[in-house]
Image (tube, rainbow, N blue to C red):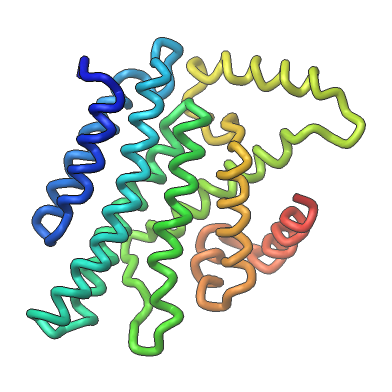
Length: 249
């Protein structure tokens, strides 16, 4: 679109605010996926992308998280005013959140942009917080995640977090050399997109979000099964190593 960036952002805010019933929620999410897919077709962080393009893509990603939150409110109100079945309505809201989560995980795997991936990670934290809030209520059942979307999210976050922490400048190290290496890695991202997850260096906000997620999974018994599924065999040993990694971060 040739519209000014502030116009596109305003339209995005208006569209997001229209997600006021189950039908409109699906329509808004479909439109957001189209926006993000168009960015994908342009190269997911290609050097020709403008700052306004990055800004709009990040805003669209944040909007996905907002719609997930709105879905919870809409379905809870629907249960209170019409259906009366809070369990069914909550699961429908969770299905919206899981669908959004899957799309965000896809972004972390496909994008070559540090800003885009970092925005997706922060939004993943918000969506997971929304899903996990049900564990704090005795009246709610565990989230039905038949496609193991939460496991996929944790696996992607672990790779991104480990890479980001490993690329930090050692105490007394040469910051210039580290920056130079980062630039070299960024230059080769386009040629090695399949290994994207091991090359993106998260920004501080996204790193904090990823640390929070892994920390919650290590300390909350309700999430241990998801973490175990994500890390596979030798789960106990891996959890110990993750705890050590987080302690040093």
